[in-house]
Amino acid sequence: MQYDVAVIGAGVVGAMITRELSKLDMNLVLLEKAGDVAMGSSKANSAIVHAGFDAETGSLKAKLNVQGASLMAYYCNKLSVPYKNIGSLVVAYSWDDMQTLETLFERGFENGVPNMEIISQERLRAMEPYISEEAIGALWAPTAGIVSPYELTIAAAENAIMNGARVKRNSGVFDIEYKNDMFYLSTATGVIKAKYVINCAGIFADKIANMIGDTSFKLIPRKGEYYLLDKTERKMVNHVLFQCPSAMGKGILVSPTAHGNVLMGPTALDLDFDSKLDVDTTIEGLNEVKFSVNGVIPQLTTRNVITSFAGLRAHRVGDDNDFIIAPSKENEHFINVAGIESPGLTAAPAIARYVGKMFREMDPSYEKKAEFISKRPAPIRMAELSPEERAEVVKKDPRYGRIICRCEGITEGEIIDAIKAPCGARDVDAVKRRTRSGMGRCQGGFCGSKVVEILARELDIPMNKVTKHGNGSKILYNKTK
Image (cartoon, rainbow, N blue to C red; front, side, top):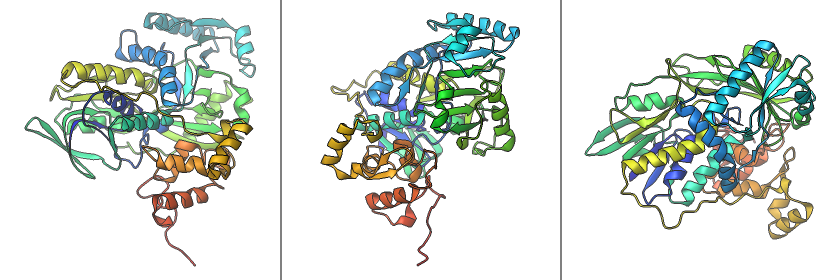
């Protein structure tokens, strides 16, 4: 099929750009090589909305970070995505660290970050009672927050579909040819023709660019390992807690999550160019997280860890670590959106607007739609309703009264909604990301089998065709009896 624009890569940036372009009257497609959206960096990151004092002043990264932080609440409200403006603290443990805070404060001021303060030890302890006794002060940035990155990605993709865009999963691009003013994208599900291409392929964006002869940048995976703690530990942390940054990034942090857990990490290990699928956790990496966090909140232990995971950031090779957001010099109809490592999640709403403006200036022939649906309806979340509200929902549909996930209080009705949504779940992990079924303390030990049954029934497929996360992840093979 022929499209006006093909966006490659359904991470948070690709999904937000697709939503932005769905405001225009065009044929639009979002291509994703995995079996679901948000399967790369967008499902395995720190989930922080950064205030914007880290990036070098004058860089695109700094500009879009600050803009994105100011836009995040608006977009999360429009898309019905969990977001909390809890603020962040960069904690100092020495007078050298205090000098670093001064540098970060000055940079933040130049970047346009509002309401920052360098606070005293006394005030820090009032804000974070469990902080290490070694802490002597902090940089307070009240505009920072936390968000659910995979839910933001899913919601943006669904809203784009509501506005006429198509999302094609399991459609990895393995070759691109340009002829007769048209791109021919060879994908796992057939050839896609498009007048314009927007390359949002994350750590594989350089590989996609290479397909049109663009070798102007190279990306390596920077691995970050994390621990996720049970909700019982939420009382230990009130804000996003950073240590002073290093050349490798913002360092290992401690933060609440948008759903009430506590996240510890990430490490920062640059991998070989060919290790772009390496998301294994390691003893060395997780020990680094544990020992580092012990210096921030000594009472926060790994006793209540419910899972660990690793994510990969698309780190740009070379001295220039700024975002790449520009038409390729090889073909002006091919826009690279690459090297979007931290604060890429924060910047995603601003990146979408930036690319949207760039595209409209490139080709003003596309008119705005007369009716753009800007709001994605909020899914029913039974655990968040009052007893009276729950009773009313169950009265209308008894399936909302059948608890499937006991840890998170997720019902059959919510899981069915997730499967039938515009960008619906097609495997167990996709249900998890949309409903939190399987994200609790037991990590799916009790609800997993029930989710398989519901997926098989609603998708009208045999139970042994249901997977955990797409191809190569079968849960059941054949009946034994």
